[in-house]
Length: 125
Image (cartoon, rainbow, N blue to C red; front, top):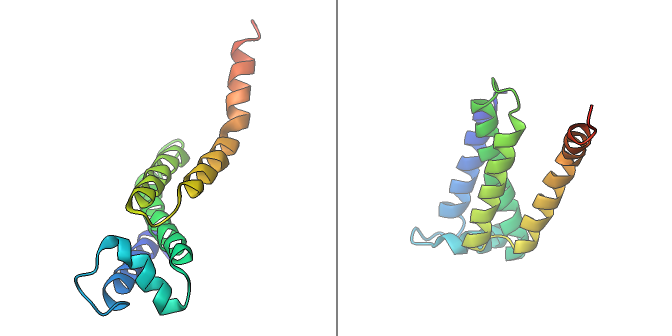
């Protein structure tokens, strides 16, 4: 299955939750996790994390599809994931601690590359 269809499916599930869960069309963006939590029997913070993950994954898949010919498509995906998590934190769907965990996880991915870069440039060879 192509990644654009996965992204479309995830975004359509979010739209279903946003418009169908509460039964009210005038629901604010901050109320979506609460409506999703009521639909699934979860608390609003867990529902917000699930929704933020769905949005982040769908956007990251779309960016990965757009940059798949690039030399390193991971860099644009990391930037978009962190920006999306920042937006989800600003909206109030997730706590700031999730953003810190994502930053630490992505930093650990690139640690070896950064260390190799500094070791090779400072060796004087």
